[in-house]
Length: 324
Length: 285
Ligand SMILES: Cc1cc2nc3c(=O)[nH]c(=O)nc-3n(C[C@H](O)[C@H](O)[C@H](O)COP(=O)(O)OP(=O)(O)OC[C@H]3O[C@@H](n4cnc5c(N)ncnc54)[C@H](O)[C@@H]3O)c2cc1C
Ligand SMILES: Cc1cc2nc3c(=O)[nH]c(=O)nc-3n(C[C@H](O)[C@H](O)[C@H](O)COP(=O)(O)O)c2cc1C
Ligand code: FES
Image (cartoon, rainbow over all chains, first blue to last red; front, side):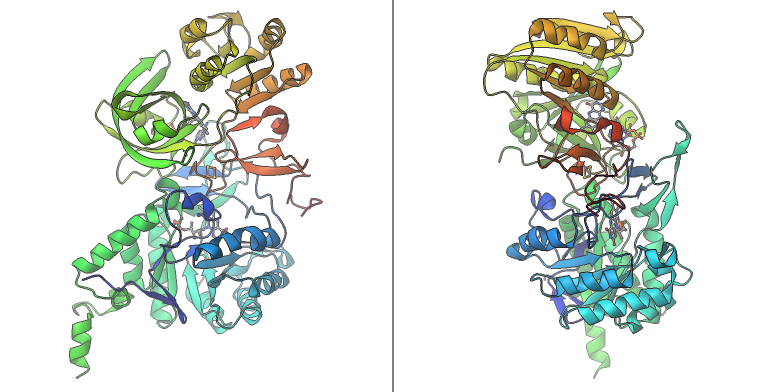
C-alpha cells in the first residue's frame, strides 16, 4: 500500500515532505528543464531582498570534503522583479512556493512581507535569519534572540493569517533551542533548520583564502550531524512545532534520519547541484524506506527516535490498541 | 527540444592520451543529439557515495554518430576530480548532464573566421570549424599554450584551417610568445570578419582587445569555477554589460559560457564593479 506522505506546515497541507532548500533551486525554471516542479512538496525561493543585489565577488565556491563552502551574498533582482516575473511563473504552474526573505533591518523584513502579502501564489514565508543586521554592526539576526523574535513578529503581523511564517535557524548560535523558542513566541508557525554554519578554507597554492569573501557557508553531508542535532534538540523542546529539516540530505535515508529526529518535512539543497533529479529520487527512496518499515503515514515516523530505548515503533496499530 | 539538457549514465567507449591531455569518449545519444558547438557537459566524479559534490565542467570536443551518439571531452588533470576521471577505463559508466550553456552564435552568411584556442580551450573549436566550413566560411586557426605538449589539436588545425599559427611561451612549438602577439597579423592577413576564442580569462581579455582595435566581434567562451552547471547555485557569475548598458553579474553556465567579448568586463572579473546592478552602495542598489 502507498504511504500517506502528506505533510503539514501549520494548517497548510502539502502533498509530500520533500522541498527544495532556499538558494539551491534557482527561479524554478532551471530545474523545470529536468522535472515538474509541482511534483515536489514545495519549492523554496532564494532569499528575496528589497533592492536588487549583485552579491559577492568570485570565487564564491570551494569544494570541501563531503561539502562545499559558498558565499553568494543573496544575489537577486529584488522583490519587485521577483513578484512580477518569478513568482507568477511558479504560481501559473501550480507550484507550492515558500518565499524566503532576507533583510538588513526589521523594517526591511516587514516591508518584504507587506509586498508579498497581496502577491498571489505564496504558500508560506520563510524568514532567513542568517542575514547581517545593519543596525547592529552586521551581527546576524540569528545570533541575537530578541532581534530574531522581533523580525519574526513583524513578519507575522504583515503576512496574511492563512500563510504560515517559518523561521530559518542556523546551527552556529549559542543555544538553538532558546532561539527557536523565542521565534515561536514571536509568532513563527514553523521552523526550518539548518542554514549554513560559517566555514573557511585556504588555498595552499595561492596561499590565500579560497573564497573572495574569505568565509562562506558550509553545506552538504558534512553538516548533516549538526542538522540532526538541531532538529533533535528543538523537537524535544517544542514537540508541537513543525520543523523543516535540512542539511546534507543526499538520499532517502538521510531524509528519514531527519524525520525520525523530528522533522515533518525535509529540504534538499546542495544535493541538487550534484543531481538535478535529487528531490524526486529522495522522495521515492523515502517512501520505500517508510514502506519497508511498515509505516502507513509519514506523520507516524516524525520524531520517532525520541521514544524511550526498548520501546517498539509507535505505529498506527499500536496506537489504536492503546486507545481502546 | 534542442538545447534542453538531459542527465544520462553513459558508458565510456574509449580513453586516450593526447599529449598532456586525456580524452574520454562516452556513449550519450541524448546529449549528442542536442549538441551545438560551444556546449559543455558536467560530470559527476568519484562514483557512488562520492565526497566530491560539485560537478566538473568540460567543453564538448566532438560528437559522433557511433552507438547512437557519443560525446568526447578533453581534460588535463588538475585536482582530485580530474585525477579520478583520468583513471576511467572503457566500459566504466559516467554520470553526464548536458548539453549545457549558450553555444557559439554562427554567422548567417559565409565570412572569414579566426578561431583562437589556448591550452585545452582549442578542444571545442574543431566542431565549430566544421560547421563554419559547411556554411562556406573560411577558417584560420591560432593555437597557443605554455609548451608544445599543451597545444591541443595542432595537426587537426593544420588539416582544417586555411592557415594555422601556433605559439608557445617557451618557444618549443611555433612562435615564441602568446596567441595575442600574433592575432593582429592573422586577422589582417585573412581580413577576418569575426573571431571565436576559448581559453584562459587573460587570453580572452587580450583577444577581445585586439578585436576591438579591428572593430570586429569576438565570441569568447569563458571559464569560471562552477558547482552545478545548470544555473541554480549562482557561483559562476561574471560582470557583463547587458544590451541596456547596465552591468549585471550573470551566470557563465547559463547566460554563457560564450559571450560577446566586448560585453565582458574582464578587468573586473573577481570583483563586483561599483556600477553593477545591485552593487553594494551602488546607484541601482
Ligand atoms: C564551461 C567550462 C568548460 C571547461 N572545459 C574544460 C575542458 O574542456 N578541459 C579541461 O581540462 N577543463 C575544462 N574546464 C575546467 C574544469 O572544469 C576543471 O579543470 C575541473 O573542474 C577541475 O576539477 P578537479 O577536481 O580536478 O580540480 P579541483 O581544483 O579539485 O576542483 C575543485 C572544484 O573547483 C571547480 N573548479 C576548479 N577549477 C575550475 C575551473 N577552471 N573551471 C571550473 N570549475 C573549476 C571544480 O568544478 C570543483 O567544483 C572547463 C570549465 C568550464 C567552466
Ligand atoms: C549556494 C547556496 C545558496 C544558498 N542561499 C540561501 C538563501 O538565499 N537563503 C537561505 O535561507 N539559505 C540559503 N542557503 C542554505 C540552504 O538553503 C540550506 O539551508 C543549506 O545549504 C543546508 O542544506 P544542504 O546541505 O542540503 O545544502 C544556500 C545554500 C547554498 C549552498
Ligand atoms: S554553475 Fe551553478 S549557476 Fe552556474
